[in-house]
Image (cartoon, rainbow, N blue to C red):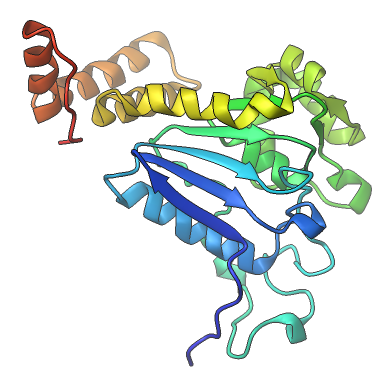
Length: 273
């Protein structure tokens, strides 16, 4: 049965190799609905497959980045809490569907992602933000994992990323108290990479994305893959990963173009091949 589409709650626009991904449920601070989760799942797939996309910026409209899961509409399995809210023919998230729905980027997404957060960035919204590789935040941004106050725990990457970013003790502190921190404390903890005035947040993220997109896309992806796959490994294993990826890059057209452009003293024209 064909499912009746709901209005888009996440928008994707690609400009000059940058994928602009925008959460768009401002009336509820971009709280994650079942349809929003499915739209993000589809967007991440398109982002990974589209050669024109070299880097992404994730942001939210309205007063907040994302206030977390919409508990009034979404159950822990990412399906509709009230079936009558779903469009005709819409199937609930089954037991085996839980991990096939990725509102966070898949683990094998090696294209860089920039998070631009403001306002409330909580729970599942903070997990989405943590899954970004470089994280900017506006002054006044508020972060928290309130799941323990609801009898839950964050289950979409917080326990993995937060422990690696902030350390063990700080992770247990934030996850077991559910306390709120501001952007400045997030910066001190390493959760945020740069704090900016609200009016400069997105333009700064765009400037960073443009700098990334100007480089050889396969090399940029190899950098992220090498770093990601080296997490938790020893030095020799990490060196092996980097050397193997470097060897592959030497056979790409972008490698030849980079060397030629350097010799000819001109800007390279990379094609991601």
